[in-house]
Length: 383
Image 1 (cartoon, rainbow, N blue to C red):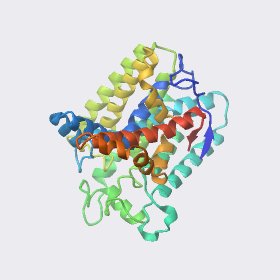
Image 2: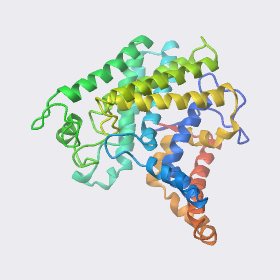
Image 3: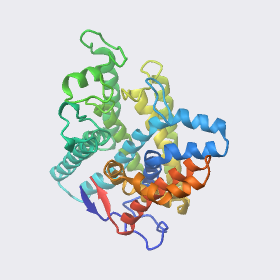
Image 4: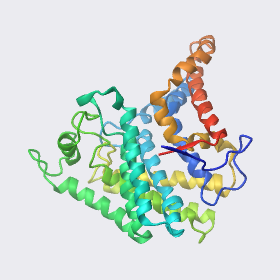
């Protein structure tokens, strides 16, 4: 991991008046919004709803802030694919721009390979690699899947133009569907899309060392890196549009939103035959989650970079500029200990109904203060 200055931090907590040509504030803000739910928002927001007595909203939040058990889709299922799509979006601002500046392809190959290796290592370290647990170690991880999917998609972006990237993304989704439904699993047969019977689970059980997340399959396993790469390519295509000067910002947002709605519709239709399923990363799931991610990206881009409504997004930008840091840091830094030391007394005095809100808000405040310190020191960790 290396520290690099991406965007100079302003002396006051506000976003610069004009976005940098090579960086869009909306991407950082949306990535920060995404990470907010992982670092405590998934507990804080329902706690607020419960405190105000919004029972119906509280129920909706609880149902949507956990993953679907198997087939189906919840809001929580969007967090990972949204982050992956945004990782792909940055390719146009990094890989493509470097190619246009004359950087050699082998240098870029090395960059994305190194990024993949570091993310795999960080993912394993976050899951206790250095505890030396042997066969009880889980080697697949969220960060590892991001790294491998980014690498596959990066190879396509480096070697193919926009048309080629579209064809590769479509080909991956169709090919994954064909493999999952036509290749017979020994002892089960083809197209049995259950935890015990689907092809990806069989590959994980026989090729992935160590412990699997779900014992008989792993949602961040080997085979799912392929459809995940298609999601990163969807992000790369969005990045090409955002970086172009052909159309106005408003039209870019409209096109992104329209493409997202079409993608969601295609995913929903395909889901009738190839179920929307995050655990298997089905092609229908990629299209549906990717489409919803594009809609969110369009809204954030329109509000922040086109209309200039940026002050509200600053808290999310601080999170979004160091997403790997807070994700890995939460496994190594006891933010809860610091939060309790500072806010446990205040939470206790707040009363039984308000105590969870104050406690969770304190945790978020400590995490955000840590990220803000890095932001002010212009330390942005990139894997």
